[in-house]
Length: 319
Ligand SMILES: NC(=O)c1ccc[n+]([C@@H]2O[C@H](COP(=O)([O-])OP(=O)(O)OC[C@H]3O[C@@H](n4cnc5c(N)ncnc54)[C@H](O)[C@@H]3O)[C@@H](O)[C@H]2O)c1
Image (cartoon, rainbow, N blue to C red):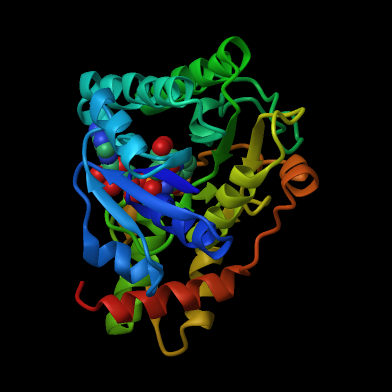
C-alpha cells in the first residue's frame, strides 16, 4: 500500500511522517526535491523519492504502476509569492497539474486522494463575528487562491462524476522547518523563530499579517493522514484544519521569547507600521467538522511548537 505524495516540501514531508507511522509506504514525486530536507523531517523513516513534474501524466502513471500506488496526497503547487510572480505557470501547475492527479486516480482506479487546499479560497472581507465554517463565502483575493479554488472545485466534481474518493483539507498557514517558505504565515514564523534559535536574536524586517491563524507542520501532517484514512465516500469531503483561533503577531513574539529563554525578538519600526493594520482573516476557522469526523486535534501548543521548531533549526544549522 503505497501513497504517492506529490511535492516534497513542508506539508508533504510532515504528511509522509504521519502516514508512515500509520503503516503506509510513501513515494514522493517532486520536480526539485532535497533529500537532506526530507531526511531532516523524516528522522530515519524510510521513503522512496522520484524526481518528476506533475505536468507529465504519462510519467505519473508509470511511477504509480511501478510503486503499486493505491492513493494520492497532492501537495505540489506554486505558493502565493511564486503564483503572483508567474500566474501563467501557476495555472499550469496548480490547475492542470491537479487535474493530472485526478486523472491518475481515475485511470489507475485508486482508493483515495487527499487534495491540499487553503484558507486562500475564501472571501476574507466577510465579517459576521462567527468562526468560518466550510460553507463560508468563497472569493479568493490572490491569483494563488483562484488556482487553488479552481483545482479544488474540479476535484470535487471528479468525486461526483467519476467516483474519485477525494477529500479536500483547507489549511490555514502552516509553519515549521521548510525547504521553501511560500506563505506569508510561514515566512513570519520563520523570521521570528529561525534567527532567534541560531543567534539568540531576531529582528523582523519583512511585512507580515498582524492577525492570522496558524498550525505547526507536524499537526498538518496528522490531519492529512487522518483524511487519507477516513472511511470511503464520507458524507463531507471538505475540512477546515487550523489551531482554531486567531493569533496577533506581538503576542506570538512574546510566546516565542518565553519558549526560547534568553532570546530577543523585535519588529523593525517601519515593518510594524506596514504590518499593524494587515489582518489576513476576520475570524478563525471553525474546526468542529475536522474534530468530529476526522478525529483531528492539534497536538502541539504554540509554545511546544516553537520549541520543537527551534530544535529542528539548530539541527539543520546555518541561517
Ligand atoms: N504552507 C502553507 O501555509 C499552506 C497553507 C494552506 C495550503 N497549502 C497548500 O499545501 C501545499 C503544499 O504547501 P507547502 O507549504 O508544503 O509548499 P512547499 O513549497 O514547501 O512544497 C511544494 C513542493 O511542490 C513542488 N513542486 C512545485 N511544482 C511542481 C511540479 N510541477 N511537479 C512536482 N512538484 C512540484 C516543489 O518543488 C515543492 O517541493 C500546496 O498545495 C499549498 O497550496 C499550504
